[in-house]
Every structure is written in C-alpha cells, then in structure tokens.
Amino acid sequence: MIIGIPKEIKNNESRVALTASGVFELKQYGHHVLVEQGAGKGSGISDAEYESAGAEIVTDPHDIWRQAEMIVKVKEPIDEELRLARAGQIVFTYFHFASSIVLTEAMIGRGSVCIAYETVEKPDRSLPLLTPMSEVAGRMAVQQGARYLEKPVKGRGVLLGGVPGVPPGRVLILGAGIVGVQAAKMASGLGAHVTILDINTDRLRYINDILPPHVITQYSSQYTIRKLVQTHDLIIGAVLIPGTKAPNLVTRDMLKTMRPGTVIVDVAVDQGGCVETCVPTTHENPTYIIDDVLHYCVANMPGAVPFTSTLALTNSTLPYIINIANKGWKAACANDSALMKGLNVVEGKVVYRGVAEAFDLPLHDVVEVF
Image (cartoon, rainbow, N blue to C red; front, side):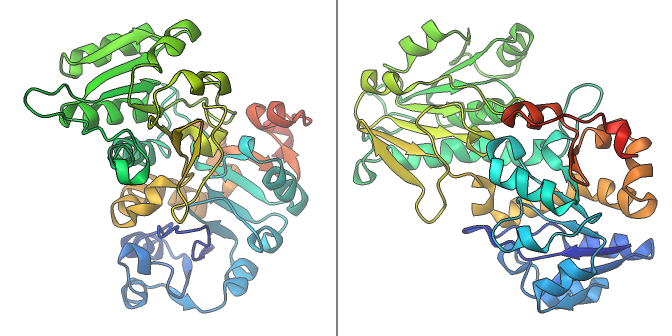
C-alpha cells in the first residue's frame, strides 16, 4: 500500500503522524511511504532520517494526496486538504467530526474512508489512540493553567503550590477520565488543593486509591459545580463522550460568580467543549477573557510539545496503521472490533451514531459499507 504522511498545516501544529521508526516498520511489510518534505522538522525528525528509514520525500503535498491510498495525519484535514481527499481514499487521523459540520459535510462529499483515532474503542471501552494525547493534554492543562494564573497575563496572581504560611491554589477538574487523572497528578504534585468531579463512583474510588489525600473526589452535579467554581482558581474541563459533543457543564451565567482572574482550561474543546463560553483557540492566540475569567481553549494542546507527543502517538497508532496497510481497511476492521468503531464516515455515509446525532444526519449501518 502507498501511505502518505503530509505535513500538518493547522496553526502551530508541529506533530507528525509517523516517526522514522514507523516508516522502517512499514517498509518491512513491503509498503511504500511518502513523507512531505519538512513534515517531521517540528518533532525533531529530519528528512534524512526518514530517507534512511526507507521513505520517499515529496516536496508537493498535492502529490502525496494524489498518490497515497492511505493518508495518515495527526489533525483533521483543513482548508485545501479538504479538497485533496479522494473517493475511496483512507484517511486515518483525529477527526472530532461532532465539533464541525463543515468538516463532516466536506468529508461526506469527498467520499473518503474516514477512520477517527478518537473513536477506536476496545471492548473494555478504553480508547487506545486517544489515551496518549489525553495523557499529554491532561498534564499540559495544569502547566498552562499555572502559567495563566500569573498576574502579568491577567490571572489571579496565584501560585498553585502556595508557600509556607500561604494556602495553595485550588484546582477544580471536571471529569475523572484519562485527562482528569493526569491533570490531578500534576496539580497535586505541585502542591495544589485539587477537587475532581465525576458521575462514575467506581472511577472516583479508583482515584481515591491512587492519588494523595489532598485530591478530593466529589460526585458531579450542576449544584456542586455552581458552588465550587466560585472558590477555585483553575477550572479544567476534562469531559469526553467518544464521538459526540461534550455537554456544557459550566454555563455562561456561572462566570459572573467566579473571582476575577480565574482561569478555565477546556481540554474538551476539540470535541465541542464542556464550558459554554469556550471556543477553539490556537497556540498563537491561546486565550481570551469573558467577565474577567481567562479562557484557554487551544484545540491541539499536545502540538506544543511535539517531540513527546509524536513519539507517544506513533507508539499507539502504528499497529493499526500496519494492520490497515497489510489487510486493507475492510478486512482490518472486520477482524478488529476496536478499529471497526473508528469508522465514522465511509464513502459518503455517516456510520458513527455520535456524528449523525450531532447534526441530525442519516445514520447508516456499518455493515452497509462492506
């Protein structure tokens, strides 16, 4: 199979979908890998490394999209990429369709086979291709939140860890999944007072077992959220419902009850966000202020640490890439129930319920596309 790795064009997205090691593995199975010139530069991978591993370096991205039977990316196609996708061509990447009707309609129109990293789901309901980036984003949420709590960037002027004689900052985390746990680890490690909310009591018990005593777990409700946002310095949205939009847990009217300089980091923004006032931002312009509350809503947070993120992502995606390349998408999905759930839009048909429901589109049985 001819596999194409284009350079990411999203604002300040420096990750790349495949490492040189990944190219080498694919070559062992006889596949041909096209890598756009400079695609790995942001992640510290040179064109020479790719060539040494067996890749063909291509200068024009149009050539990659035209030749490749499977395109492997990090982020969803944007701008001119939406016009380059072909009917029947496999596109394997983070799509987050439920957050964009424009993207969804465009890929329906192109007739491509769209397999979304974020909805690949194992029988135990774990999300193997979302987990590594959730781990990065969860840790980064605290790192960025701590930074934007500083007064020169309009935060409250709070040091999360406090100092002797001064209480630590207070961090509220909405959601106890991968993002939430990683955020709690980072925040508690800094010495902050941490409260984490969820509606899954088994998950809350697990967190009580693994995290230190100054991480407080509470059952989530609108009443509890309304009360806690008034007293916490950093609020982290860590809610995910696979393949569909996250619910608005923090509403517009709650902002007026928060203290000036409170910081919100909505990690769920690439899936629509769990804070009503959050809209996607970029690393170039990451924040904005509403009612004296600072919002950080960068949709590709892990892109700021591409060396770590690229390696973590490829570790997880490569086995699936090899499986698809070796067997073709139909056989690969038929033999792997987790990969089957990654199918979102196939040759013009929406086959993932969360995407269909988000935009009231017809839902087709996945069996129809085989």
